[in-house]
Length: 215
Ligand SMILES: Nc1ncnc2c1ncn2[C@@H]1O[C@H](COP(=O)(O)OP(=O)(O)OP(=O)(O)O)[C@@H](O)[C@H]1O
Ligand SMILES: [Mg+2]
Image (spheres, rainbow, N blue to C red):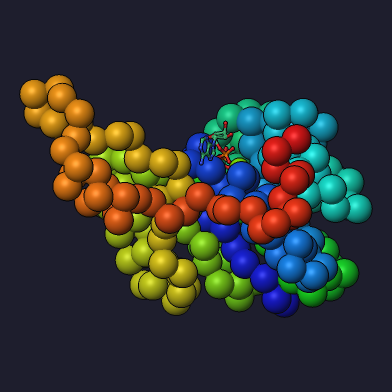
């Protein structure tokens, strides 16, 4: 199985946007790339704001939203809890087989996790176990802002302890402009410093590519 597993330091950090961006960018370079959402909670399959529909809309893959996200639950809770509320379980073998089947149709597949690495998918397994089952390299999406170093370092440390090898974590959203303590504008030297250290996570779409992300 060839591809990437997109996890994050938290929920709402930009995993879906990054997942779609990677698919579009790779496709613009001539690769055939599939996409999947491991487990979706807080939205049913056809919810227009759910990850399955957003990934479908942005990447325009042939798969239906139900194929993109084979397990969707209404409650905005950890997948194992959301599943339990519907008297269902996320079957580990079934999910793995489904994702491998999607991957088999493409050169590579980009799989979005749910929340962060230790989010439970069942009583005895987590998103990290799924990433391990699929043997895909990790992409860690991190929020750009105060606190992100700690969250990113925790995620990377846990990933490595569990035998997963993350790519270098990149803050995703642009950092707010720095202000001097007296409220004035940053000095030119500060601005240069800020430019050098600006987060590099924003994907710059290649010429003619990723138009899907703008729609
Ligand atoms: N670089 C960015 N700049 C501004 N807004 C962003 C950026 N990346 C993501 N967003 C916005 O942040 C919100 C959360 O993004 P997204 O849905 O991709 O997060 P997520 O990590 O996939 O969340 P979930 O855990 O629910 O799957 C969305 O409204 C998205 O449009
Ligand atoms: Mg998402």
